[in-house]
Image 1 (tube, rainbow, N blue to C red):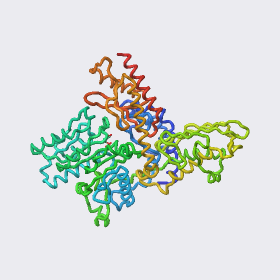
Image 2: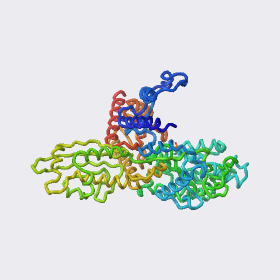
Image 3: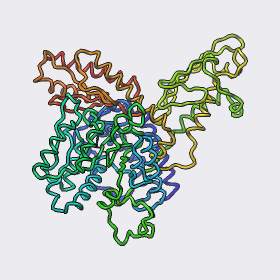
Length: 615
Ligand code: PLP
């Protein structure tokens, strides 16, 4: 690689992406192209000679972006979120730059060791039982996806039972899950060679909000045992894909244990919420689990892919997935001194999943703006932060205010207003609004009236420094406490370090609050109903068919979904529960604010009015 050429091209790429994020709201959220749209726009074969990066950018703009669905748009409410952050993006860049392949400890010791440490951190944050920590027999590993996570633990469980009962038992071993369990379990069963008739899909009911019933599970197990089958694997879900149902882990875990089954808990989406003490209860009972999975790439600000899996017995994974060809042998592995993650996953190769730094530029821009007007660098150190009220201005955060001891929550919105009375008694007004979401920091509005005059009157009527200093000071603190890092490292590590637990918790709470807001809007409109109780940041709702004509209810809601998504203004998805077509509104894009949710609801209402008017 020519380093200088890389520098030039990478800068252009960064500019391109920064512009994309600046204008992301201008794109239709759901791509509006038709299947096959690209074939006629691109040549039939690859070019014989190199083309310029500018030509490629032009093509991306004109031909590729129209075919992109904008998952990072603040108006994206479909499926579940797939978070990104600037930190995540930078980490991906670094990962691609280092481009290591860390399958064995020796191929990059830092990759393995940091992964173990960070997954221990995350396990502690989720208050997982100690058996999941790497100090004992267990430990965590980053898989690409939750599908891979369930597959590897299913394979480990299968081989464990077959070691005990002999290979012929393969025909008899049974997997249990609910009809709300993600289809990943079906795929895993197919790959693991589980007999198709031995994948028990337990029906759930609206009366239990689509959670798996321990009683019905017991009946199914008893029936299978009676006919000579062997229950061996149970998959429970915390936050099902359709409606965020939460299976009762404690009761299910006990059933699994008493029947000698492996118990896996899939918390791909909702696991992130469980870092908040008030949501941790939803994984109560995880002590009974043999394995647990959550997707940091869904709702934890970590760019795709990053699916965290913990097991209590790592030997089971290794026994199932280990291969040891001559060409991979090395002293550290042979001496059993190290973890080789190749034996915990399907592929051999694995990335150093690097990331995360805060976006410094908006901060710098902000500092420049302030400093260029009235503050000199050396003044900063002489200033102290005082309580907002005594300074005669107002600090409002969406969730927390900045306080004198600089507790910064995330995401947060700082609206700063001050009235300054310079010596001549003229009132100056300054309004600065800064939003920090998902690692994006931007100055939403900055209107300064009378800034020139302010420069000449650096003290307010009490002789105190102007409030502008305080703002600078706050950012100085925030910068020092949150932005200092000597070196970028693994993306999850960087997310945890640079956001900090409190900010991550606020991030989750913010989305849940926005979903609550949406739920409230739906509940106020008698034409709609909220279908299942909202627990996390997903609202399941539907448009009620006029005159209770349920025969047309599904078509009506399907038409509504199509109409909404074809506006390009928002993107939502659907599911079917108890035969009813349900609309899903999942909040979780890092840039989403209350105004986006409110505007989305208006789009929904307007389209519903049009549809209902035609009936
Ligand atoms: N499990 C649950 C509960 C999910 O919601 C999803 C995806 O939305 C998955 C598993 C599959 O996730 P992945 O794409 O990481 O395999």
